[in-house]
Image (tube, rainbow, N blue to C red; front, side, top):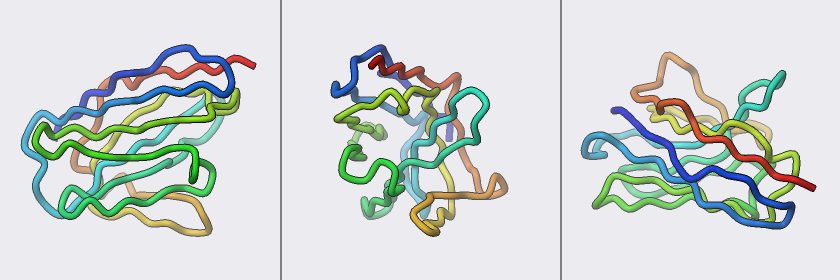
Length: 129
């Protein structure tokens, strides 16, 4: 599965953005498409994912209540609505399709061996204070 991210941009703190992750093929199977971010000098951080099979969603504690993941299964697109943005949300946001995600201690994680599809260049989100 090839994925293409879009929708990033510059916002002031408190603003909103909606990111899109478009899949190159029909999204069927037992896996979930999710979003992660990586800021310079920091580890990647899983944010949220949604099952392509039944739409079940998972969120990392860091974004729960502010970010909402959804999908348009007819178009094979996954969205990440980001509200109440903070300067610490500034990062490169990417999407990934993974067979098995784990929510452990409020952190959303996956193993690279379970990745079945990746995004392209990611999309930059910058939040100013």
